[in-house]
Amino acid sequence: MGEEVQIGATAVGVKVNEGVVLAAEKRVSYGFYTLSKTGKKVFIIDDRLAIASAGIIADMQTLAKILKLNARAYELDMKRKPTVKAMAKLLSVVMFSRRFMPFFAEVLVGGVDEEGAHLIVMDPLGSLIEDNYAALGTGAKVAIGILDAAYRPDMTLQEAKKLAVQAIKAAIERDPVSGGGIDVAVLDKNGAGEEEIKLQLTL
Image 1: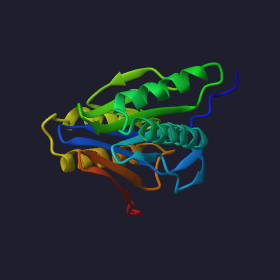
Image 2: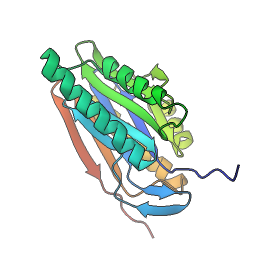
Image 3: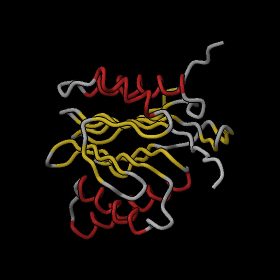
Image 4: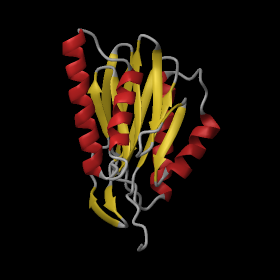
């Protein structure tokens, strides 16, 4: 085996009573080679569900498409939207079925349903862990430190968004393969919203 090549990315999720925030930086890199500064790693699945990923961009896009198609098919068939846990379980089965040639992606599944807000953390083999906050990718060690220090379950959704962005910014400053800007998805009972945050260059 040769030296491991890291696929750069940082993604974070924060769950509060009002909803869930998912955020990820935009740089697409392979090792220390930057392929793009405009990659998308946060995907809105429907107006109550989104995912954020760290890993190979093609695998992230494939998993998002699989989830989006199945969520739409479920809604058409059952005449109601699937729960967050049901979609996470479906994605878990898809990822585990490829365990011998796995998707190179860690995934955060976030959303709001009748049971409330959910944030589910998944590794490349589809293991499921529900948590209040999480960080994935090469910048996760830095990002989780920010989340650990400041997270409160009673935060407002806007405070959670600010914390998620702060965690991604901290990771970008210290992780050479993360950067390019930040994509944010905010989900609550009223729906899902997306925002791109451009970073100021400092000389």
